[in-house]
Length: 116
Image (cartoon, rainbow, N blue to C red):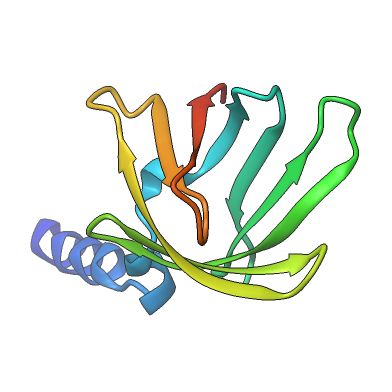
């Protein structure tokens, strides 16, 4: 019986969809930018990784989907305010509490602090 439970657990937890493998778990949560905007990154019921960025006045600034985020590259499809697809570099701090993502077509970056 113990053997059967072990096999079932390995099978269940070993099954991962491509989306689950393409975005690191450290991304999920609520982040605050240096401009006091908030970014929420979560996974939908369809295993899509989505994000929303809102201002401190609760105005929607951007939303979209993270298609892939591995090995220091993040692929984003932004749906609002305009549809745009881009790939940027990213890095986490050693603690995982700070995330830096390069802005598209720029030498500037977003610096995010994990709040939840």
